[in-house]
Image (cartoon, rainbow, N blue to C red; front, side, top):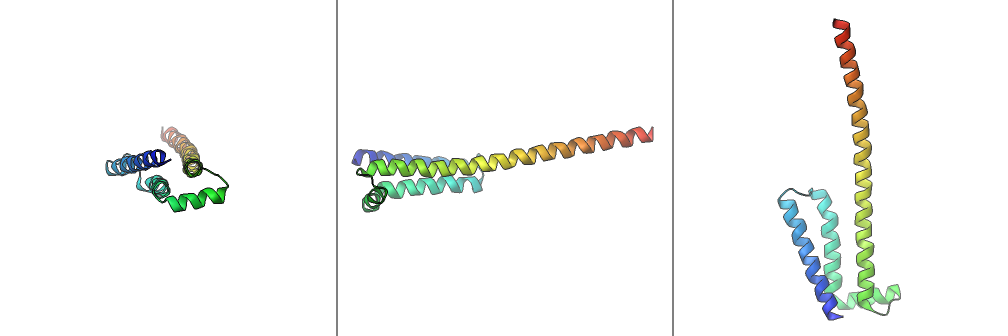
Amino acid sequence: MERLLNITTVLSLCLMALVLFSVRRSHIRVEYSVSWLGATVILLVLSRAHGLLNWVADFLGVTDPPVALMMLVFAVFLVVFYRFSVVISDLKDANIAMTQRLAILEFQLRASDEKRR
């Protein structure tokens, strides 16, 4: 159990460093990094706070605390991925609307050029 928790701690610290490095290099926007940093903090706290992890395991009805930790990790990252799916969907809708407006503007520009001739 302790080995899994130590590996989880190391992985969460690596993910946190990767996110902070990506923000610093402008590879990821700050508003998106908050979700990842929140997920890594939750993972880090649960992998180090054995009492809290035992309470969570009891609350979930799981006998093994590391299994409860992995369930929570999965749930947290599932929420993060859902949030990004919503953001991507909004960006796709905005991209379609922008493309349509551009097509209308090009049509109007061609029509006005034809009128001038």
